[in-house]
Length: 120
Image (cartoon, rainbow, N blue to C red):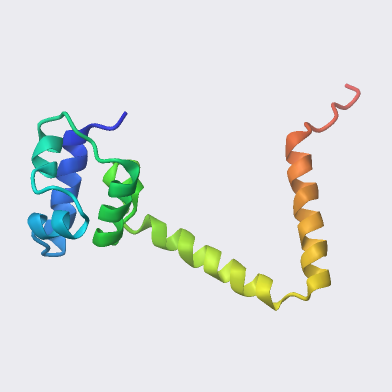
């Protein structure tokens, strides 16, 4: 479980870095003005959807707020990779997409089945 005090400190620091008042952040994310105080006292961690709203508002990842990464922009790299893949997939013909899907499924099946042991 993640420490609500550390999450509160990360939110405060992230807001400070982009010069956004905490009150404004909380209001625009639909949270009460005392939400951060409750977190700092150690008794409250926002619901998942509220953490996502805060992360979106601060343009960082929920993982960053929770202390699972030191990189506030880690979510951007994944988004860029996903967008590149989607762009490439859209250029394939329907037949090529079907073939690629079959290849991917084959790779996933190989991952499930351990390789046969050799006679040793």
